[in-house]
Image (cartoon, rainbow, N blue to C red):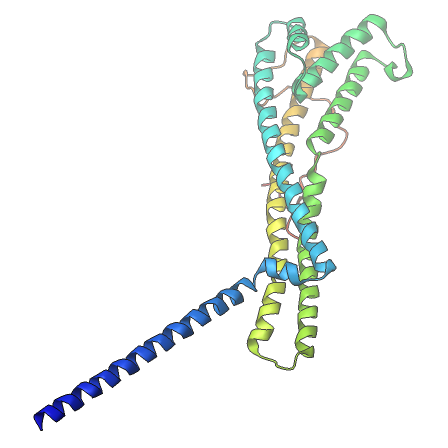
Length: 304
């Protein structure tokens, strides 16, 4: 009798072990089939999936935003490097200019090293204009008038040229900062419209069928803001930098004009960035406007 009970117990344990093995294998098979499904669902969402599934309008808007971003970042990096190099050269020239013993020495230094920045360019043209008008007089119609007026016109022309050169590329940054959010918004509206159309044509309407396409379409708005924000920040920074630099150039022009017309050096403390003449005559024809813009093209009032 005990032997029969022992055999029955062993048979029961064997059946339980077999059942456990079957359950374990079933769970493993289910997990193995669900992992590729989840991976496939994760791969079927995101920006790249949205771009791949969109029509030619969505792809065109994505390419436009990508080109805007590349162009703005190229200008940001190039202009930042050029502005740094320009400031370094300007400090060096102003230091050498005020340390020179005469204008002839300044002219020789410019002829030797070249006028590779606005301050040297302005000084070279002003000295040459003064010497040319004093030696030959008014040979052409543009040279009519006194020496002072002729030198003033030449300096004003040089300042206008340098202002235009410093502002080169800022129009593109302002355009990118003001238009890219609306380009991204248009892409979002276009994507949501087509997503809702596809949902309306489908037989089953579920939350995952709505949230996925609409969420993908919203990526275009985020992409537009990601393009616009660096462009706007860089534009405002460059406008501020140019305003300060041109103010120093204008102050130097007043000092140089006073020295060329009176033959007396202006009072300065060998400061390489600012000069303060006793009397200033107007050089620049238009005031420098420091108008900054925000994302979407809205103006920001204030200079700091």
